[in-house]
Image 1 (cartoon, rainbow, N blue to C red):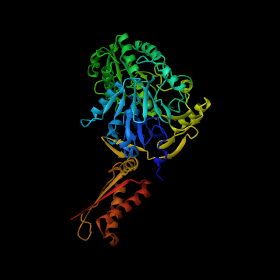
Image 2 (cartoon, protein in one colour; image 1 turned 90 degrees about the horizontal axis):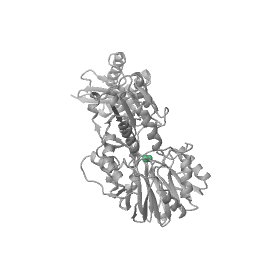
Image 3 (cartoon, rainbow, N blue to C red; image 1 turned 120 degrees about the vertical axis):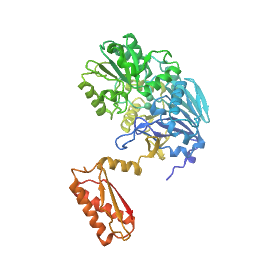
Image 4 (cartoon, rainbow, N blue to C red; image 1 turned 60 degrees about the horizontal axis):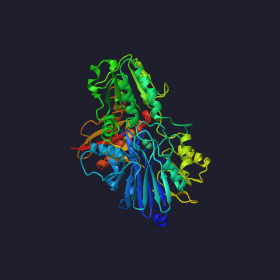
Length: 553
Ligand SMILES: [Zn+2]
Ligand SMILES: [Zn+2]
């Protein structure tokens, strides 16, 4: 039964369409008085159930149907899991986008890569500024994270204030940008915050996340100790880290080359926004091999083992410009994101086989997370003191642990939401009261396709069981006019399996010869398909995709 929003018209509701079943793909909606506000619109990464697909975006059917009442999209920061879906989805939303200058610059770069076309209306807001969007009073509050200009969004409504934290940590020395605005957080806490919707990523991590300033000390020393060619990989969006690597290279007398499109994009956006000096000296990765090995540092993408990224190609030895040799060093200033372990380990092994030294965050303090560990979460709850806690930015296990932690800190009500949940934010009533359509849409090359449709189902079958193509030529009375042709790519080897192929062809010929088979092309094709399916199931225990083509002469 569809949920009747009109019954709750004067109430404040929260509806996440992404980020409450997973870490990534954040999309959050708030509604009051029949109007809607969106916070963030990000991508997620596809898993092995979606062959050929790298990224996914939220199913936004629900809000697209209400686009006339969607008043705005507020972006908390420039990470892909918070704004990466905008180029794919904004046409269906059509609302203005509110973002700080760095986030807006980053978004414009992304949009321009999608080619020409109408651009969304982007309203630039100063960090820490305010705007009234219909019934939503929006205050940006500066927090530290692993990218500049991360803004928590305090939303003031007739029903109360929601603190939507976005991604954050408390870093006492973030290197780029100010420390978190503790005074503003405390001021809100003093004024009675109805609900806090908060980052759960590191809720299982004890203590504190650590500071970029500390990383700079350690990473600089590690880089200074590298005697030969040095490669450093990190998350491209972590501008403080990028700046640290450039600074450390400079201090060690090494010149920097960038390898990987996202690093170039981030460095350009950072120069435009004034976070990096416009005149930093960089060489092209094409010139790297002509420089003395000890004089060069290559900063590259691919710390998660992405197969097409620079580091994977360097490790495999098929990067067009960069080759490594014994004695060179690769530094991972990153961590392994769960799910990527095996491909990162494969890359690590390829490097070790080349006698390249590999240094990771297990060897030295050369990476810190951008998300709050438990002690930081405790401090945040002590400052903001919300009546209701709605954990987000996590898998169900993270959300549950976060809710437990919030309860232990004296929060009166906690709500475990999932994508599509309708959460009523009211004292004494905080709970999930219904659900709306939600899900995932796959980005397949340059188009969007459903994740549960025929294309993906067939692709999975092709991947797991291969395919069979049968071609039959029939005359007027459906007599066979030429030998049956059959190939089975990804299933049978044309030479090795010639006996089984011949057996299939004989069986098809027999079926076509029987009087029962004489009918329309579609029925004939179906009979052939069924007979091949039965035979291959019996002989190989496989169920390939089978396509039968009937031609008439
Ligand atoms: Zn995030
Ligand atoms: Zn983030």
